[in-house]
Amino acid sequence: MNKRDFLRTSGILISGATLSRYLSSEQVSGARTNWAGNYSYSTKNLYEPTSVEEVGQIVQRCEKIRVLGSRHSFNAIADSTENQISLSHLESMKVDKAARTVTVEGGVRYGKLAPFLDAQGFAVHNLASLPHITVPGACATATHGSGIHNGNLATAVSGMEIITAHGKLVSLSRAKDSDMFEGAVVSLGGLGVVSRMTLDLVPQFQMRQVVYEGLSFNQLKENLDAIFASGYSVSLFTDWQGHRATQVWIKQRMEPDTSSTLPLEFYGAKLATHKLHPIAGHDATPCTEQMGIPGPWYERLPHFRMNFTPSSGAELQSEYFVPREHGYEAILAVEKLRDQITPHLFVTELRTVAADHLWMSMAYRRDSLAIHFTWKPEWPAVKRILALIEQELKPFDPRPHWGKLFTMNPAELQAKYEKLSEFKSLLKQYDPDGKFQNAFLRTNLYSS
Image (tube, rainbow, N blue to C red):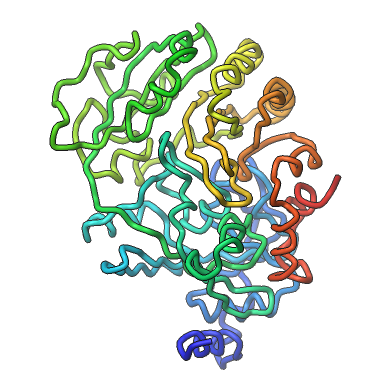
């Protein structure tokens, strides 16, 4: 251990005179919920430290604890019956221009990170639909963004610092920890508290966003790859009626030879004449700029702008990842359920994610098509429909998003991850007594 790491670890382990300031967690009156309001957390004990050293001391003192990020998960993955800890006050960011990396603390959201990077001439390779989410929370659940050649957000992680169950600060990196690092990045919150993350950067770039309306699903039979490769990031939206995508959102990098002329048609779909929200009838003001108007990467890659309510707000979400090579057949399988899906649906988004080598990623070792559902807040009906969707997708080996709603049997889910046994060994190594375990992990990783 070098001097810097020794001093940092020692600072976490000691108890200072100021300990009493934060070891009494915030006692919240009334239930705390995720941002969509569909899930209420099981504890009123929420710690909100203001330094990494305080995080270590809190972790040491608690028998059980889970990290609460931006509250964007729709299930119990961040829940605890005893204690939660939020790193929302830890927001430092530092760019290493020579290494082309940025190191961020655990409370940094992409909406704050992106303009900071752009001002220094850099970008991250991808962003999720919402810029409101935290960097460690997104990476821990393999949250992904879109693009046929783009890996999920966690694929940019080249280093991380984790406060483990005993309050010890451990540094991991892609360069020195190789295979184990690939297991640690998508951690599902089970290894410890990620206090800092280092991300690889790319040069900043300009983009434009163009929307087309009315793409027949027939075009996907022969052209699925070509359609999703037509931009840096491409999303298709559908309500499952009419055998078509209602909208096609194409996000293109602006290159020196990019024509300013927008084609009036795209595989039979018509160029939109005004700005649109993915959900029919919703005001498009919260959406990022369209109509082919160029702008910074971080103002085009997300679907929604940072200072507005994302998506619908009061909603449920679920998402399934299938091999892209079977994408068209998987779409047709879900389409069979259209008359049961549509009454309870706001919109479905179809998007692609490149394969990666992160053990617990939904795109582990396979290029994927993601079928995302934004539901009305009608859980009993949605739960019934999810079981039907999972059954229809079964021939295509679907993997559900870790942070969204699904009904899949734990044994079936576990069988989808060939590195699960190694991942559980990693959890045991860093958290031998299960301090960071909760009902979600126990059910989905350990029960049969």
